[in-house]
Image 1 (tube, rainbow over the protein chains, first blue to last red):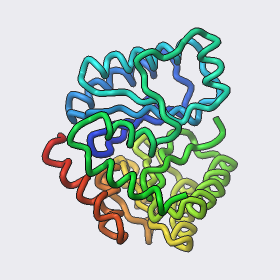
Image 2 (image 1 turned 60 degrees about the vertical axis):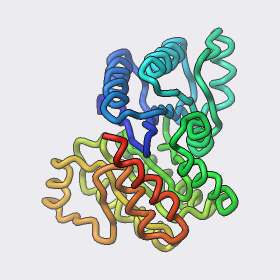
Image 3 (image 1 turned 30 degrees about the horizontal axis):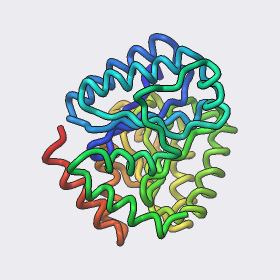
Image 4 (image 1 turned 30 degrees about the vertical axis):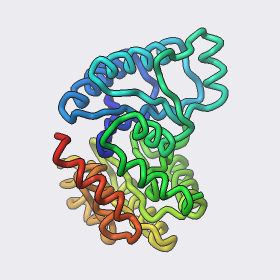
Length: 135
Length: 135
């Protein structure tokens, strides 16, 4: 399992990082992701890091670089699921993830992306309409 | 990273399996998943196995059990992203995943769930409407 899978949800690509991001996996992920953005015309990238209990400066830089590459390809990046300890570590490392949007979870991330991209009004309505029913 | 994260997308819970499912991780996942179904009132569970290049009978049974538990909790399970070699292995092992729906990818899985659950018409329309634009 040398690749992080990239899942398509409408016009958003979802990446859930669960493994240690060694150099070659991170490079492969950036390659795969930029290729998928071009192929699918995705307008947003969600990076879920809820499984990460620690981050180091390498992971922090990887996220920043991914966001920068995506932006050049006209897709916004939202990092979701960050654990409190991870947020503290990132700030202590001086990595404030400039230019990267964050949201608490995937649902909120999708809503944030929908509010920022045109043509996703239906997705926005769906996610919002669901809030009342869910937990 | 001892837990597989469970991501909520509207009324669907998404599980992307990327790590070797050792016994304790699988048991933890089933516990977590059934609890999240109850908490969120989710109507569907998507299990993405696109990162799995091999499966054994343990993983096959885990998927079947998860689907059975979810069904009792009124949520349908769809397995998505299965690689051709995995499908062949499952059949050779005699694990035909009875009662488990399958779809090629997350997008199709969401559409399948939307078509089977009432009240998700908006999600259905969103995913379908997006097909023309995407790749």
